[in-house]
Amino acid sequence: MTVEEALHQLEALGSEKTREFNQKRGAGQNQFGVKMGDIRAVAKKAKADHALALALWETENVEARLMATLIIDPKKLSHEDITRMVKSEKYTLVADWLYSYVIKIHTDTEPLRNEWMQSDDVMCARAGWSLTSGCVARNPDVLDLPALLDRITAEMATAPPEVQWTMNSTLANIGIHFPEHRTRALAIGEQLGIYRNYPVSKGCTSPFAPIWINEMVRRQALIV
Image (cartoon, rainbow, N blue to C red; front, side, top):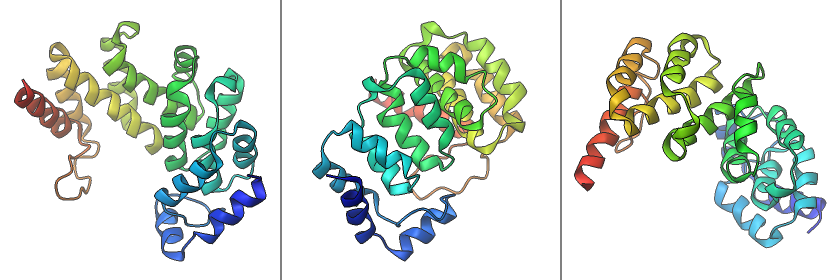
């Protein structure tokens, strides 16, 4: 599949309703308004194709970049390549797919995490906190949890919204997975109050850290 063929297929699947929905969530004008399932279907037809993925990413089109994250080979991306990709994308949906399908399985995650946690670039900082949140759950030995809670206390209230989201995830994961830090994590969440009044659909858990932590701990207790 060529870039032109991929773009033609994606454009044909677009709708004004989805474009408007994406714009409300922060997407720019360079998009077709394609549903996530349809993007996955086009990516499945293209199969793994690193060169095509890089070309699609360069278009800066929302759907093309989403498709690129599904067909790229993370092992072929250098430290500099992946940092450049993170910095180049401001729409959080694309950033989240890049994290889930590329960054999280890259071989260089710990050096990237350490670099991005000190970065002044908003999207690098966001990705750094995403990796840190994942480390809390999967590889906490590389972390200083009290120091992370110190940073969250000092920085989260004034952090950009993009970064607040992944800092909050880190806070919640610390409270969920580490009983010895739970009381402090709950107190920080209450003190900061971020996402306290966040609207959620029926049956979904609020991202407000104290609610999130307590609900996940409750579910864990039911499993045991």
